[in-house]
Length: 167
Image: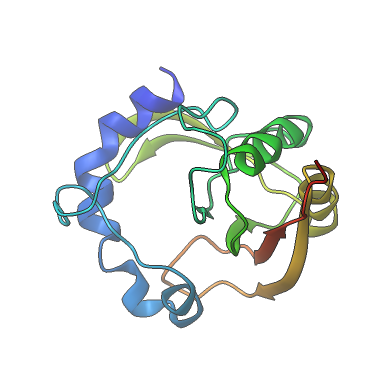
């Protein structure tokens, strides 16, 4: 079972369980608007490969990449951030991820069978990779987990802006 199939398997339970998640996470709520296609039909959603986005260069005003790098090894992040930079028009962005070194494997997600490895990253390593993609980190925040509400790991939030490219 691959990543997409695993999330498809757990999609309904995931949306039901996490739709109100931000009610208990004040920092996350401040930084992000949580939506799901079924619950917010007026919002357009797309799926894709973060290393090869089906978008035109400079076509996005911003990217909210909330916990989106959990399925990438550190060595894959350069390609991910280069691709994000390619599709971005200069604007503020947010990236959030779990801090750590050891991957966590999950076979069950909210009662649905999955086959997922969640990879945690070190903020300094991610910042280096973000910078290598012509993005400048403008702010970095870390927080402890909200006890009883989420997985017990520290979180990192990075805000970055595009570095102007010379013609």
